[in-house]
Amino acid sequence: MNDKFELLIERATQLLARIEAVLPQPLTSPDWSQSIAWRYRKRSSGHGALEPVRHVADIRLGNLKEIEPQKEKIQRNTLQFVQGQPANNVLLTGARGTGKSSLIKACLNEYASQGLRLIEVDKADLTDLPDIVDVVAGRAEKFIVFCDDLSFEDGEPGYKALKSILDGSVAASTPNVLIYATSNRRHLLPEYMKENLSYTHTDDGEVHPGEVVEEKISLSERFGLWVSFYPFSQDEYLAITAQWLSSFGVTPASIEAARAESLVWALERGSRSGRVAYQFARDYAGRNASPSSGAVAPPGAARPS
Image (cartoon, one colour):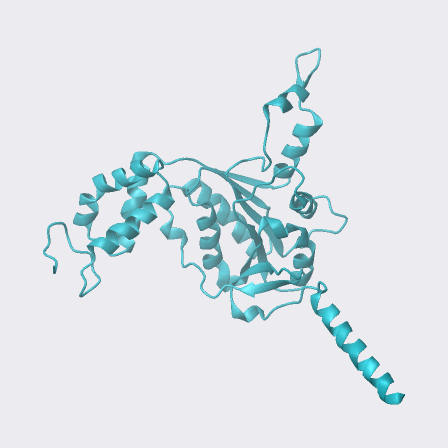
């Protein structure tokens, strides 16, 4: 009888262990010495974890050209944050490929030695933001929670979670955490023509948005700093292309010779952006590199067949 009872206890223990393995677990603090950047990942089991980014993009503020006003605002805000001064959550919006996310990564590299860290969170996991904030709240480092290419559809749960964390939760904001988000649209939610019908007019001519419009604007307004990015002119695009070509070791003569080709490259892609300039520079440098030295050969130079 005792043997059967002990066997029953053992099987019950094994069953409980299996159940506990699939239940969501509290988010635990990782070994922060492993990296300066982290990704929050949620598994199919519901377990969330902070995973170190092994190879952080080595982009620097000096690499980013033709966005000086935007760079100055983001750098100033980030420096205030790192120094323990008041700073704002930031929303970076505008044309694609103009350096929004690159600027955030460059700031991380600039101030990592002063204790700045970054945690990238996908919009689908924003509902777990309170847990992430709780894990880092007692740390000495400063954490940027980075949400890239952020936008929501109606009814997505992450929208309410982000709105609460930014401003409006009962809990006080944590002084060592800021939200930096990038988006191609200012108000983060889709806008429809029919919503214009909800605007009301007063007798003196004032226009007031309806509740639906107010709701969509309210999330963006909770970011203390808005930074807008605009499409590049041809001259700006060429300047950025030249900078990237130079970083790949292309000679000044080759950079000048590549101007026309870089414009064709942008025309084929329908965009003059920093991303397109970088992609062209990589392609050009790779095609024209000397196999023996890795240096870029000048136009017309002999190459082994």
